[in-house]
Length: 238
Ligand code: PXP
Image: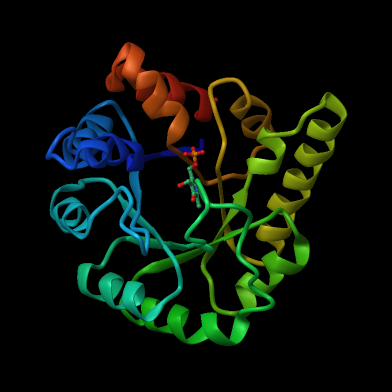
């Protein structure tokens, strides 16, 4: 049965829109756990547009399940992870102007830079996952640079404009899951998943954890976070 990691970044997005103290992503994380989330994910971006350092510090002390810190592979972020010790770090590419993470990491092109950071995170006892496109070469490289897991980027599947493209992208995800297992990696998945499109990915099997944010937080605005998390947990655990 797959697990559900709830990404609470967009609770912080609403808070930062007013520069005030509410809503608090820490409270949202606790409620998500009470509703059955298997883990909490936050992305501490270089520009601090939503999640703040204070959020990660308090979450580290309060999350009872697993804390997954998404971050760029930089000196600053690796030092923060070494200090706060999240259960898992997911390395993502980061561009200042993007609305959200666009595309997976180029593990092959950045292997020399990634390897020492991954080694440091591993020495600190942190599980390291790399966010990659459903691409066999990038997945194999994720193992070669020392990663424990990959998170397969499902965004292209989710945004597919036609049924045919969607089927093609789903097949790429299926092959990527197999490739991850053949490379002895734990396989996670995420980005763009919602209450409709997650079903076909879940039906493929083989994914350890889904990291889902925007769809859950959007639904929570209308039906409450408890119900939004429970409904998604039911879908991913099918
Ligand atoms: N996984 C990664 C690596 C991400 O960067 C994001 C977005 O922060 C997500 C999952 C969650 O994506 P979404 O908000 O579209 O569910």
